[in-house]
Every structure is written in structure tokens, then in C-alpha cells.
Length: 202
Image 1 (tube, rainbow, N blue to C red):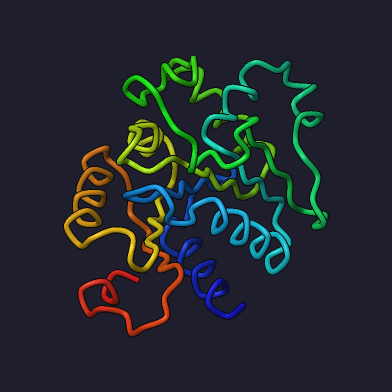
Image 2 (image 1 turned 180 degrees about the vertical axis):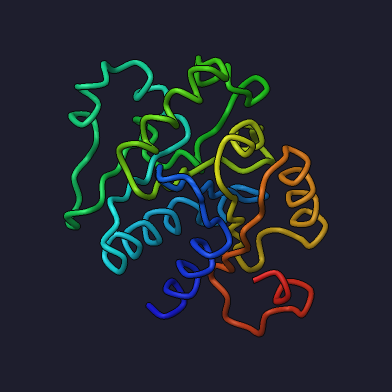
């Protein structure tokens, strides 16, 4: 998968964490149905296989599971995969980015304070060299905007024909205001030439 190899390269170059701890990247989108979950899982598998890094892909809602568990028991709640270096953790919703959210989509939905979120992220930083967080779209939740300042970078997923240009631009502005570091875009499901305005951001 040459396209994913390019994305992997850009992610690690752009994020370039100086700390010895692991890298955390958030993936989100403007609207539901953009394919964030499938991209998150595929990208995580490519990172694990092609770089040999210990990798975790976790649904945003599942961060509460890490907080709730005793640290020594956390490895027991992580799902195994066909790849030795890759672990997964999702809630019962399976696809967190496609879940329907209630209230305001804030961290209260996770029943976590900012301090608890930081604690969960500190754990995955110490346990994994790379973690991808599968977040719900900004159209239905602000969870990604809450997490964005706590991670090393954000990748926005755009499915061809789903989000309009103004929605994508709004999502980018919201994430930058969070604040966060936008690492780039993944264009999903494209079967026609990439528009010039979007190509410049890939």
C-alpha cells in the first residue's frame, strides 16, 4: 500500500516528537460516514508492519476503559490482532467514529475529566510507540476538539462526495483553534481527480 506508506512518512515527519515517549495521533472528520474507523485501523496496521513499532488503535470512547482499569490489568483489555505489534481497543460500539453521541459531545460523555484523559494518554505513550485515536466527527461531537490539544497531531479524513468544501474548511479551523497540529488529510473513496484546493493539503 504505497499511499499509506506516504501517509506514515508524513505523520512521523510532521509530528516528530522530541520526547522519548510514544507518538499519539488523532484521526477525525467533518461528518459521519467518512471512513475514519477503517482508515485508523488500516493505517495502524501499516505502521505496525512497516515500521515494527508497538502500535495501538483506540476508539475515543474506549479511553474511559483505560482509566477505569488498574494499570497492571490494562494489557488484558487490549484486543489482539493478526499483527504482533498491533493492539486495538474499542467500546461496545465497535466503530467509535460512527457512533451517535448525545448531549454536547464533550468529555462528560466519556465520564472523564481532563486530568483523567491526560492520565490515559500518558499510559499509552509509555506503553506504545505509536497510538492512533479514532474520534467521532465534529458534526456530532466535540470530543476530537477536546482531545486535540493533548495529542501530537491530527489527521483529517475526507471521503469523496460526503463533505463539502466549507465543511472541511470549518473542521480544519475548529481543530486549529483547539489548538492542534494538523498533519494532513487522507482522501478516502476517491475515483476522480483530486481538487486543487484539497490536493495542496494532502
